[in-house]
Amino acid sequence: YRRNILSFTDFLYNEGVKEVREIKTENLKKYIDMLISHGKSPNSVANILASINTYNRYLLKKGVVDFSFTEGIYITKGKKENANHPYF
Image 1 (cartoon, rainbow, N blue to C red):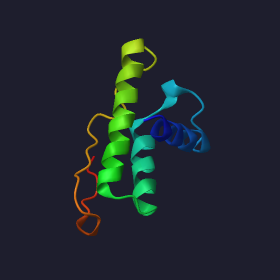
Image 2: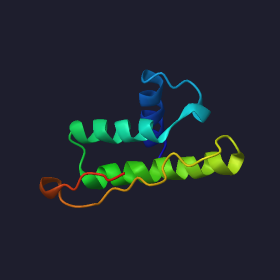
Image 3: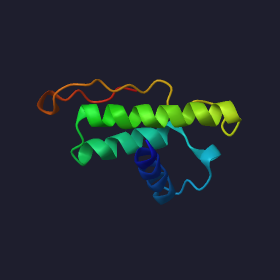
Image 4: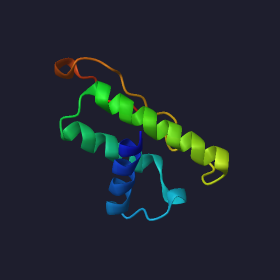
């Protein structure tokens, strides 16, 4: 979980997102695209997205963000050679 969140926040920082409240759904879409382009399997991407979704729920609960940047993003698990791309 921690490694997934740190990787995501590093990506965000490199994208110019300096504050958690600045995270947008588009940032997450770019991150998922990057993971896929680097050869991550659909199962790996789904697990990473699950971690990010948990993090997003925590931020919502604490009032740090006021919307879900993970809403509407789904990953279909499957074999890498039959990979289904995420749909938004």
